[in-house]
Image (tube, rainbow, N blue to C red):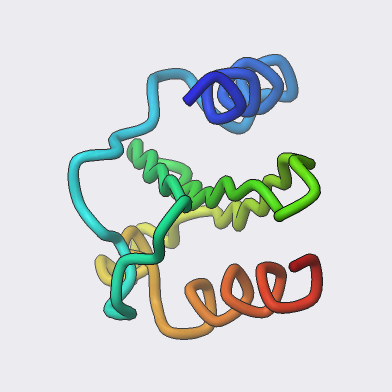
Length: 95
């Protein structure tokens, strides 16, 4: 999805990402949503979880959670329930 690619470019320009989103798996435990694209990026210092959706009116929205990875906590590289909950809340507010 072009919106996810544009988000990636923006996050790279701000220094939050160096690579590309992976869109091959559902990063959150919730069921896949129709019309929603998710992206996950990880490197040794950052985790970025993004969600793109289009409303009935045709407006595209992007929500992203950016987290620095704690070297002392290996699980900080994985999206957690709070990260996924934030993206779900954004979708519910903007539909």
